[in-house]
Length: 239
Image (tube, rainbow, N blue to C red; front, top):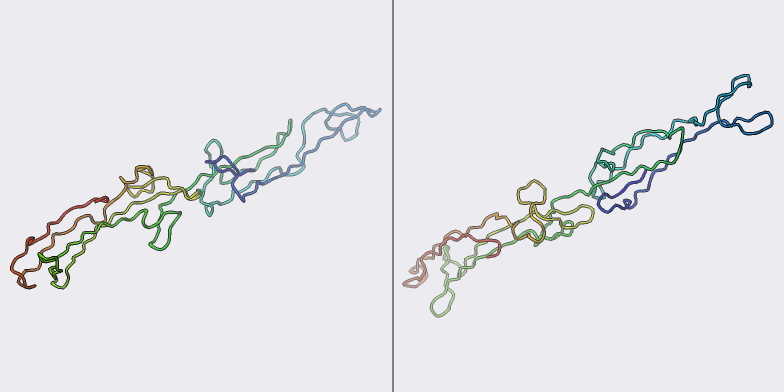
């Protein structure tokens, strides 16, 4: 019983084949001169015989064999035969008793996939935080006509007001190879966008910069301000 990677067609590493043996026998019939007549069975008194080329199974044949769980290696839990049928268990069987021969059973395992979930400090399946997270920042700077910073932010304590918009995308990777397969855009765990079109996979967590009202100029020692309120704007991942 061999265990194959269905994608590469090669045997799964560190998963040895299982060998089972079945013992068969048959009796050789000879005449009184020792010449072989054939194979078969003798009567209890030894005077008559019945010829047959068939073998007899000495034991119970090949036992059922549970296929190994290879999920830890990144494969799907349920393997299959070449025809697609469930191969979680290779059922018990016996050799052909008329024309016995070795039997080869091949069990195939499919690669499983998973959404990559990196953190800022730790990649996941080769995907970094920066691969699936993007931040767009708007800096509103307040200064006078001479370029001197002015505490014109809404709180009156800062010369710069910062706003952030965040975008994410979900990378789907092969759990066996860690290869990027593409991106999921509807949270069903299935690739919707291929890697080369990954820019279309960015989804906004928040994509709008709210309007920001400038500090009243009289509160910061000035008579006028050229922009009373910086308008709101919706941004995209590549703004």
